[in-house]
Every structure is written in C-alpha cells, then in structure tokens.
Image 1 (tube, rainbow, N blue to C red):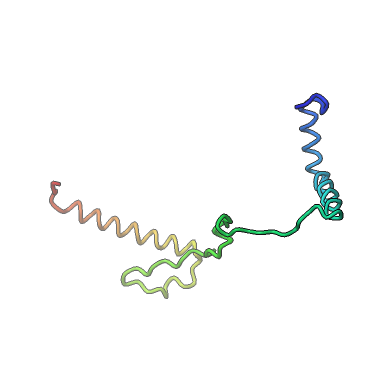
Image 2 (cartoon, rainbow, N blue to C red):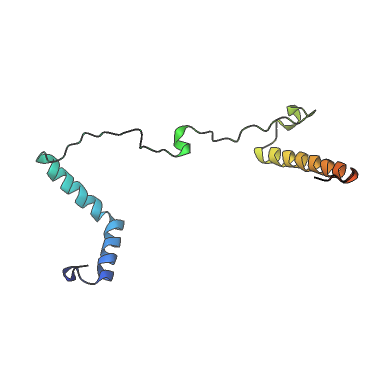
Length: 114
C-alpha cells in the first residue's frame, strides 16, 4: 500500500467505518449522478441467460416436503391431522419395523455363500 495512505490498520479501519455508515454508498451515488449528467453512463443492461444462475429457491422449487408414500395396507386417514414432524416420526417407526422384520427373516434363513 502506498505510504501516502498511512498505516494499513488506519486504512482498514477507515474503510470498515465508511462501509458501515454508508459513506461509500453516498460517494458512489454522487459519482454516478455526475457521470450520468454528462452522459458518460450507458444505462442499457443486457443479461445473457446462459450465464445467469439462480438459487433453487428462486426457481420455484417446492418449499414443503413431498408427501410420504402410503405404506402397504395403511390408509392416509390415520395421519391427516398430524404435523409434518409427527408424520415423519410415524414413517420412521414403520421403516424400523420393516427393517427389524427383514433382519429377523434373514437371521432365520440358512447361510448363503456368494
């Protein structure tokens, strides 16, 4: 950093304070207004959609979780008044039961070689 700006800590602190109190924004507005008055700014904007990226939430992505698939033999009626959290817990309980049943069947079957 050139010596004419002073110690780097002073420059940093000044920049931090000016950013916080809006000094840089006011300076930019004044420079833009002066340049616009003399016709030095072309305000035409062209956006090439091949390089514009949007976050998934800006693109209309779902904000609610998708509905859980109905389990075999269980009707959706029993879970209608539950919150999403309760529905998730209920589904996890069903999955744990299915895994335990599968593990029990596997434990009782003869060993297989691969």
